[in-house]
Image (cartoon, rainbow, N blue to C red; front, side, top):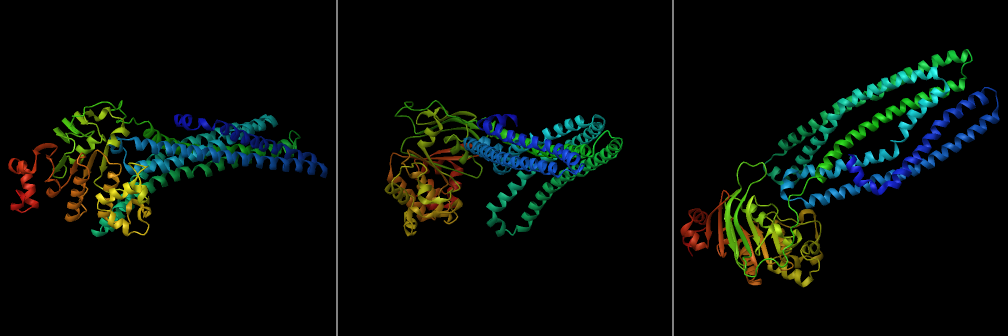
Length: 578
């Protein structure tokens, strides 16, 4: 937690001094108030002197007004520091997450990252606000009240020395048991977030299979688990106030009993006894507030550890030295050289000794069964993962030597699941090239077979896009993501099964348009359809991460039984060799 404080609170040094200083001044007024009241009782009420009462009453009023002013300044600085630092932490987390490769994203689940950016940062903001507003005030009041009471009467002050350690012991006993609960609550919030995200993203499937009740039970189980933990922590925390107030009240009774005897013998005045009671109350209430601060900072400490875990996670994929001036004009557009890949903590390779080359302008089709490693192979080309062994070369340069922006600028990717963000069509289409003209956008839409339905929309390129593109059909979303990839005329186009939601006629028209648009463009296409890859310059057949067939359609029909079996499952026998 201290590391995060040094990193994100350094720019707020002045506010961190101003806020607590204002609160300290207010606390000084609170310490003086019992002494003023004691004089009002002894010199004013005791002697019937109204002028003394009025004069000291004005002093109390002035201190109250000044204390309010200093409090408002402190509240303002606390808001600025807590909200500002919270925003900084949230931005740093978001930036860090965007730097993560798939390896780090696999390690941290999406729901966990969302909870850390929202709930955990909120806990840190509360802690920072309390740091500015309360951390100076209550310890100062507790110690100051104790010192002031001892200066009034040392013998009576011994009651403090008995009561205060007793309350401190109560706090320690309760908090020692609460801390594990607070840490467990955050992990259980991750679980609730995961189930909620799955239920909301898969609501159509859940309803189609009538799984509403099962999902509700799963959610109820997770929330009940989190609730039980929160209740257990709440029950322990609930012991603090009644236990400490009981001890405090007993201390006040002891002060009144002992102080009353001293008043009767003339050792103390009535005003001093009242001041003593006020100081006793301030001291013990301060300890109660300090205990609440301990609860807040305990929660914040757990959240800080989770935030720091993300921020301190090293990014496994970083920029290379750069590929400008490297490579050779005659180099293959893509070269996979004896590549093996294994996911962390996995017992076997996902890809095993894969080798292939794609010349500039050629089309590589990748086909295979589910789990054969098709998408993983494409992820290695984008350097979303690094190969465990072997090399992936783009234009003759190892992908690890590219700067990431340079590599991603060379490649254009159409993911398997079409993804759009809220905004307008234009804002979604210009991701690769923010300076693209309307003519270039319409050209990309024409190639992607999306221009027709976009022209029918009243606002055209400025038509709104809802979150995740929910106002478009699945096929329309896929065509829009293809158009987005084509903006800027990429030299290498990676298509991860982009035609799955398209009818065969649109599929054919789109492939013909892509082939005719730029003969020099290299295309890599993953597809489950033989019709989508059969005309490719080179077809790679994967099975359990191994290349079992590599060649043209006609060659593979004769030499690769698995490919022929796939063809016969989708085409008539006379079409297979046509």
